[in-house]
Image (cartoon, rainbow, N blue to C red; front, side, top):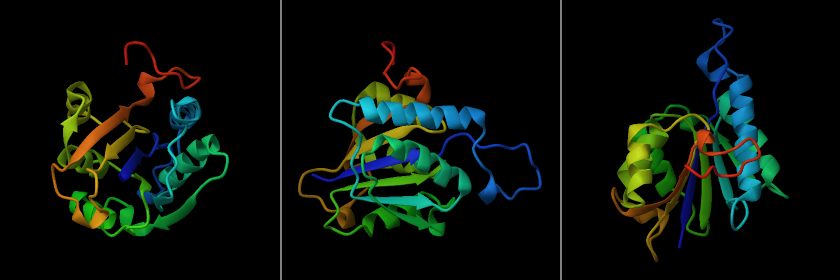
Length: 184
């Protein structure tokens, strides 16, 4: 069974209005959220997500987020930085996922909203109703999504509504040490 992990970049810094959107770094809140997510991944039941391939937007805030959360892995997997993931839209993001090699069973995409939220919402018809409702309302910065594909379905066969939302974790659902809060 294949698994798609999605991570929205952490909060970016708007202090320098001269910076292009693509070149904005993380702000202090974003750095804390990324560290919290790394702690969550390190403590996660079953260990951190172990993608065989990571696709990351070339935007600085996405690259910075990935660098911080990768600290949860003993040996980081291969990363492909792709300019085409920068605010590409839901349809193109789905096309990119469908183009993943069939030999890859677990992939992580680090990118932007609204693309990640819309992709998740439209791929997942099943899963925890509470998580589906929360995700439909908002996908905050540095949120993590886990999507399960049906058995024997390859990336190229993905269709809207064909997947299961396995997990949705927001930084506010976690304590600073990465432990999931009781009310989350």
